[in-house]
Image 1 (cartoon, rainbow, N blue to C red):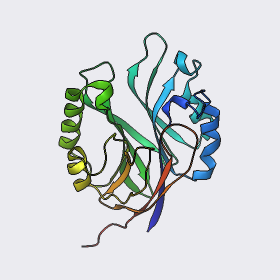
Image 2: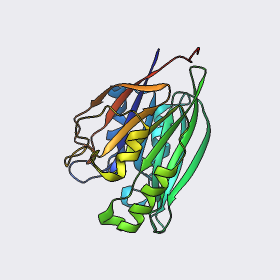
Image 3: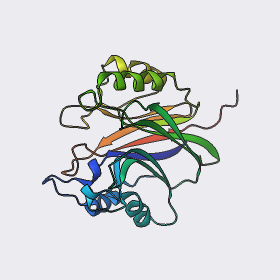
Image 4: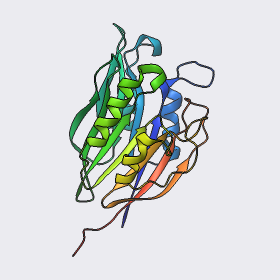
Length: 232
């Protein structure tokens, strides 16, 4: 069986421990993860708050032409750019879909689906940043979770991102029932609120959470086994 390593990280638009923005510090961390797929949340593009830098392109240019990338805008930051979801892959990205989970507020919620060709197989990678009730309101949160749980996931997919709920929550129950989840360690000082799960032939084998003084979320890598096609 083939191994696929997936890095999941909410980078908080490049904020470091001292509240300065340094996207280069995040980029320098990438080699230690040895990832095949990278799913990031809170990535700025030309936003004044992060120095008007296109953070998506900074990552893409650093990774090089052998990597593929996709982008989904979550919200505009006035006249000073936007922020959203970024997915990078060593495997070709054949198509990207943007599933709107809730558009009630300025900060919209999407499930970004990147369809990849990996080891002669087609898989989908879902990059998701769910709203936080304290920021966007309970109705927005409830709508986003209801839509996500009604989404029909492909048989072979990876679902990851910042879900802003604990695994014991009612919101996450249906999603955790649909996918295989092996995470146990904190991904944020308050607990485990970030996930990376598998479905179908993509089975998570191990998950490593890394210590980091960058962002308020910890980066973590999930190693998946891509099981062979069934001969039944």
